[in-house]
Image (cartoon, rainbow, N blue to C red; front, side, top):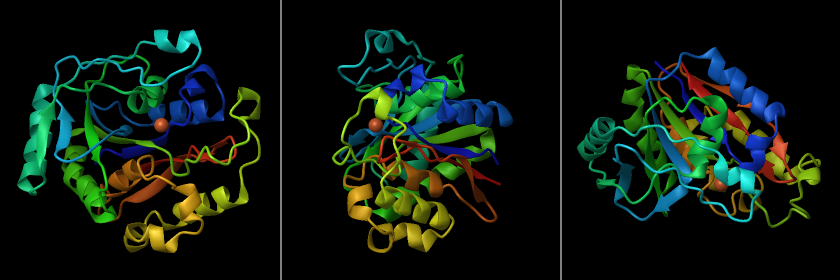
Length: 261
Ligand SMILES: [Fe+2]
């Protein structure tokens, strides 16, 4: 079974720095076979139901961030889409009674292209996106992963992008020179709980009741939810392998993992 992957994406400027995060992502991508397709679930395509699946032949690269250095807007990462794969994904979700439809209203947003441009700079793997349903409960999110599991059999990378801890409110300054400040204790405690419990399905389903400091660490759920989708692809003796556990600023966990057989 092909691994599925969740990557913490943090600030778009991660593509400008060759730091440990960057190296850890590159090493991981080189350690596995190259996928034939990528199905990405990005925190930045949160929408009401129906679930949306991008079906354009050539989805546009979306620069959905503002006020960053000019060079950021010149980075090109625009692989082909795959209308056929989109059809298969729609059919799988329909079989499980999830309301779903194809969409041309979005493209490849920065949640997808920032980390994937580090891992696969050639942009030569056809990529489609699936929206994250707004207000979805943890059962539904893990169910999405269970449905997507079948694609792992076909050398297809199921990819989630968000952040396990994502809270800008407590950060004193988002200047580049404060990026490697010591993280807050509560952020580390929550991140460690997630590391310890990622293979315990019932704890992940109940993480909002069980995890310490959840209200601060996951103040809004859109960046956390792709993590649950990726965990939902686990099966049998699969395990969770760490790709990186770097923190950026005081409360952005870049924790990235692979579900491997
Ligand atoms: Fe983000």
